[in-house]
Length: 103
Picture 1 (cartoon, one colour):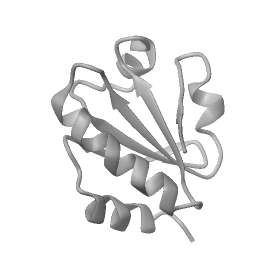
Picture 2 (cartoon, rainbow, N blue to C red):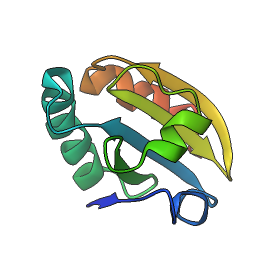
Picture 3 (spheres, one colour):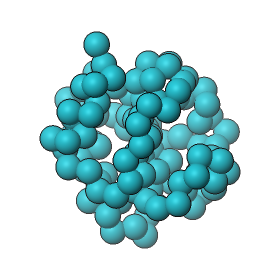
Picture 4 (cartoon, one colour):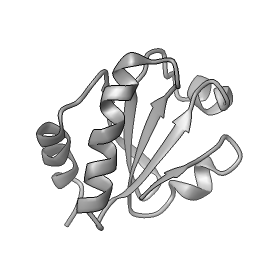
């Protein structure tokens, strides 16, 4: 399951464990390609929390983190940003990157 998060709950929702945050917008073509990949991984992996944030509705967090292009995927581990991917990322590559941060 992929949880939708907001500016208000971003810090709380992403402070524990390995969390992937998908910064996206409904009008973004590459975001529409990325979304099914995130959904598949969320079903397959229990060791990562998957979230998404609509940058149109939640501009404060995107601005604070310097998100200039979407889709941007951030990976946080125990509240610290450990990786950042901009543009479409294929499932196999994303899976391998997530493996680096999980035990």
